[in-house]
Each structure stands twice: as structure tokens, then as C-alpha cells.
Length: 343
Image 1 (spheres, rainbow, N blue to C red):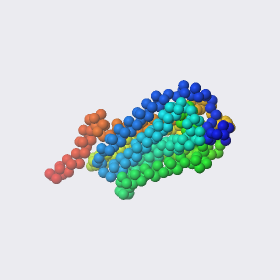
Image 2 (image 1 turned 45 degrees about the vertical axis):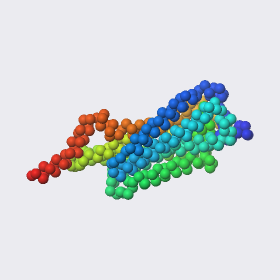
Image 3 (image 1 turned 90 degrees about the vertical axis):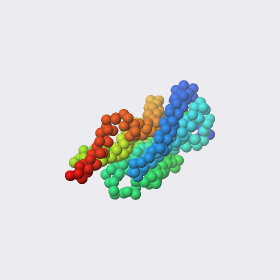
Image 4 (image 1 turned 30 degrees about the vertical axis):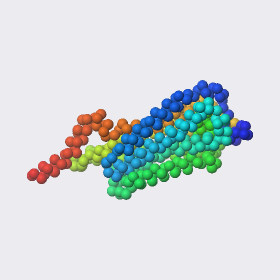
């Protein structure tokens, strides 16, 4: 246990910087602008999703999962943004605002929950598309909005259960540099190491699963389009649209989250430990953690734009020739049937 004032909670670690130095480093305007842009982006995506129609039960299921992802990103930005704004208003003096660490523990749970949810939902969406493309008739009942919402609820429950583990004794949440947020502790204790590795491995496995399933789904679609029977089949524009969006979500999640996940796993496994017995981290490590966290937060801003920009209506405007070619291909089976009938 770190040595601090007995009247304070267990989330406070010794800091290398004074309160005045931390206030000079953190900009409340940057945090506020970041949060406003993210909230506006997710609200726009939710409004577009609300007007999306057609495409059959599989597309409805995919849109439901996507709606769950955008809603999760919106709530994550809203809750964390309010807490960070409150700490900036308190001039980053967390000890004065939350001496008992209740708010810090709550934010730690929130950070883990809203951090894992997009990765787990991305894996769930990849699994749904994999089954929809490779096994379209094996589980027809699975492609329904009700099942999709049940999947979203299951992901939320799993992420919440993991986030609550430090409150049950596995790992710890602590105030992080520069004093505006709380997150898991990168310490050398068995609980800190176990929880840090669990968080990093679960997130990394979600990204890896998404990559494998999406690769197989794309290969299957390419085989359908370019195989011997391609000329007799109507191009599945909805499936191509969903796969493009899913690939974009996967690439964004990989670019935003993998640096932080790798950094967490590397730091908790360092020998000698990065964190001293008194709870201090090297200044460079604290700054790196803040940078990687900011990069990871971009995932919540970019996710809605993947859907907004990679819809068929937008893609057709950008590629009119490809759209015309797709319409021509879709008419080919009809023309072939008419020619056969005339003969």
C-alpha cells in the first residue's frame, strides 16, 4: 500500500509534479473540444442510423449492433467528459474533490467498461457477419434485432464484470497523470499485473478475432463475386457495404487501441518494475500512458464517421462508375432469363 495521508483513500499515488505544474500541462479547452466533437459525431451517426431501412434481417441485425456501438461510444464520451471537466473546474485537485476515492473508483470502472465494449462489440459484429456470409442458412433466427440487442447487453455485462474486479480485490484504480482521470494501476503487485494483463489480453484477442473473421468473410465475398457462378448471382450490395464498414471499424480500433494495450502489458511485466514500491511511475511512463489513452479515445470519435462515410449512398456519389457497373451486373441475370425465354 502506498504511503499517504491516512484521511485519504487508496487511489492516491505520490506524484513527481506539483499541483501548479499539472495545471500548466493539462488544457481544459482541449478536453472540452475533444468531447464536444465526439458527442456531435456520435449523435449524427445515431440520427443516420435511425433513418436506415431495408436490407433484410441480416442488415437489421448488423445495424442494431452498430447502433449499440455508437450508443456506447456516445455514453462513454459523455460520462468521462463530465468527470474530466469537473476535475479541470477543480483545478486538478482530486484530493479536495474526492478524498474517499469513490469518484475515482467509478471512473476507473467506466474507463475499463467503455474501453472494452467497442472492442468486444467489434468482435461480435465480425462474428455476426462471418455467420451471415459463410453460413447464411444455418442460423436464420440469429439475424434479428432482438438477438442483436441481447448480444449488446451480453457485451455490456461482460465489460462491466471485468471493470468491477478491482473493487473486489483484483487490481487497483488510481488517479493518473496529470490528475484529471483514473485508470488501472500499472504496478508490480500480483493483482495489478493480473488485472492489467487481463485487460490487455482480452482487448487484443477481440481485435485478433475480428481480424481473422473479417478476413475469412472478405475472402468468401470475393469468391462469390469472381467465382464461376458470379455472372448468375445478383451482387450483394448490402453485404459489401456492411463489410466495408466493419473493416473500417476494425482498422480504427486496431490503430487506436493496440498501442495502449501493448503498453499496459509491457509496463506491468517490466523487470525491474516501472512503478516504485511507493507508487511512483517514471515521468516518461506517465506521459506515455496519457498519450496512448488520448489515441485510444479517438476510437470513440472515428467509429461513427466510419458508418457515416462508408454508406452506399455516399460511396455511389464518390464512385458513380462503380455504381453503374453494379446496376448493370444486377440486370444481367434478368436479361439472360429473357433471352432464354425468347429462344
